[in-house]
Length: 339
Image: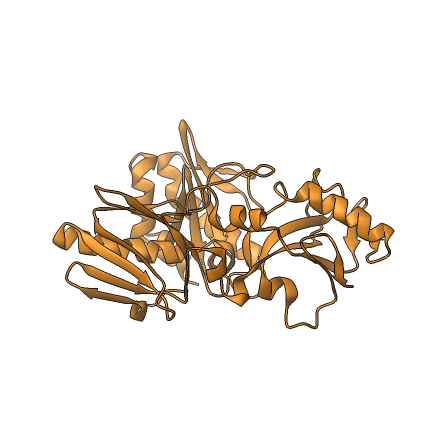
């Protein structure tokens, strides 16, 4: 990669913000902004990914020295760049990994940028999301597009969080939309929301002989001999999929957006989706939500009570697989259907 040649010929002479963003744009590096954190997204080689990320970080650090940039080894596996008397922090991330796990960041930016161009030209946009089953979400006279990024708020037992990734606003109302890529494997991490129930279920299934907890090479860390898949209740599925802000006025869009999915005719914008979801019945089988209790040696969730195990609200295709996965399947009433 020629990033060193590109970066070393450019130095930053101004204050950290917003000059940092101008600098990163000048060297044509992709960025993801989360509050005071700036993530620089790069393509990494198949091997030595962390070493490559650290080399890029050190190269950026050298060019940012005039702004007082300093290396901080805390906060990331490869460290980060910090600034005196300024809360801005820079991280270097693998764009491939971010693309796989980032809850549709690219999708929501694509939608926002497209609609904003129409608004800039015409003053407003009439927007419709539609799928092949003719299910629609529509809002007219949109003048503002807000990107929410990840869900905000703290998930608690039985509680709700905001799920909208993009909110389209007009003078008369708004359309909150949650976006999932077609290949998304998870709806959300559920360690807090479902952790206590997962812990109780693990105990029950172990006592009944359906699963085993095995020791690992890591002291104190255990692992399941089988993943556990649990059908959610109606209320649980509603909370996870729609949160507290999507239903009834908004919806969930499943699509990995490409240019051909957007059709513009003056102020009219039609966005074609793989699925438009306004109710639980609209969810395609591949994305039906299931609880997935699985191994993760890096986790020690107090609510679960089993170090090395965590829980996700997963898409059906990830949880069940093609039918040949070695799992314990439990229905919403707690009855084991397969082990």
